[in-house]
Length: 463
Image (cartoon, rainbow, N blue to C red; front, side, top):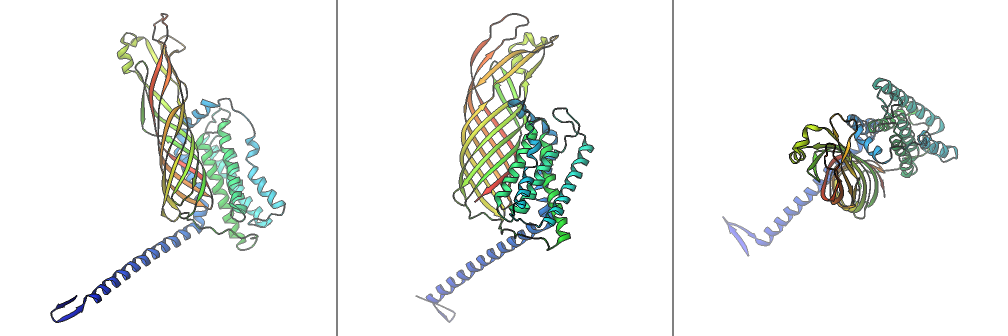
């Protein structure tokens, strides 16, 4: 078939050939454009990662900021500790804080060379320790924040935690970036153990240890930067490992610690017309995941959560109007909840080093036994009103997150989470008696627990 128009004769085969040629050129140009754009992004990202400002601030400053944001929420995290181990007190964290430094110096002493010569190492570490100690002490005696156990007014920030993360960052710089990233994982695991122990021992608030960890990291990176300015190219012993901040095509496993804060109101209808509204609270989780394909994986999470309750009395007084004037107050215990879940994980790359993802997991939860007390006017001590004994309940956990790869084996996540549990509890109800002796009532109550939280996770990555 041919086309003839205004004296121009063009074979149809040539027209088809021209069209396919134009389409091929267009597609090729689009690929070149995408590849060029991707190359530009990667080059720009690499320049940022290699800049001194990024190396000094990228890991520590977010911890300091999160600590500052949680400064007024410390009691919520302390409630978790007091609910399960109120009498915990061991002094091992006084020694654990130095353990990453002992590992680093031990490796060096036994001839396993890291990044720096002895001279460069000692100068770097001296700068780091001086900056850390000065920063911590200035803040301690400026804020004069009381310790949780009332043993002093120098709680903020945690010096033990700052010391531990300073030594962990030294170990990371000397051996984690030159020999194996497992040294970094070891150092920061020991430092995290110190931070957790300071809270378990009731010596520090949550914001204290977060800020202390950030100060320890930033001080060390700044100390190493100052030493780099002095020594320049001298004193390097072992070359650094190569690393590209892109795990799009990698399979890997992760282990992370999450800290979050409950947002919104959660109204719970208890038996006998007693209503409570959970508002605010803290969550703490240990999470794991294994990505067996570039996008899909499986994982699990263990969570401890608590919510601060407020008692709503309208329905109760509608049922018992005759005693409203005799009641001084109600007392409610903090709602604590433990869950263990497992399920599916997903991730996809947005930019080099930045990923979006989520998880859908199911498992079991266990709400702690719950008490509501009542105090009558002119009465010193409160009396029991309701006691709920909970059972293990089915649990559903949904999470969405952004993750930034901050190092070869480290990532920082920001997440939103929704957790729901449906179950039942046995209860004992002590009817208001106004001095009369009344038999308690027993029964079974069905309930739904919702928990919506936002927070951050520090994750160790292995592949």
